[in-house]
Image (cartoon, rainbow, N blue to C red):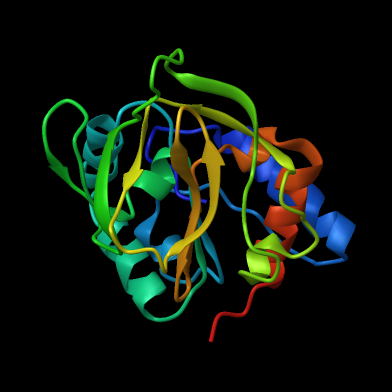
Amino acid sequence: MIDYGSGNLASAARGLELAAARCGIDAVVTITDDPDVVGQADRIVLPGQGAFADCADGLAARPGLAAAMHRRVDAGAPFLGICVGMQLMAARGLEHGTTPGFGWIAGDIAPIAANGLRLPHMGWNELVFTPGAHPLLEGLKTGDHAYFVHSYALITDEPAPVIATTDYGGRVVAMVAHGNRAGTQFHVEKSQAVGLTILGNFLRWSPQ
């Protein structure tokens, strides 16, 4: 788990440990900002909360950390971004100016068009997806609830990476996946049984 000064590191780590135990997986969850440790990781989780630009700057401020993460993911290690960690997968963020993202997913992180609903979008909301859409959704059904806290979301013209959405004054991207890279806009570590199911699926996931 990447430590760059943002995100619910302890609770996300506990969620991964609990999911591993429930799945019978012997997993060691390490919170680190050491590029050498990241470079040897079997799987990488990037949490995030707050503003896109702050998270991008925080990651860039750790010498060698982002480069090690990109090399390991490019080499095939499964990646899961959580909340702003997912947003950083996009081409750019438009919060507090324009900030480049990783460019793994086409599109921008832009304000939610909530159509009069209160922002941030905070609380439990339904996930909408096609059964069998992705291995990370195995064991879930459309209509299951996850916990969201955000005012910005992915806006993209490329439908393929979007594997789940929710509705908050309109369609909002909830999950993305492309190759060995995936992300959840919602907080899996706060989403109780649904979150543990997704984390367990991530620990078993073998992207082709």
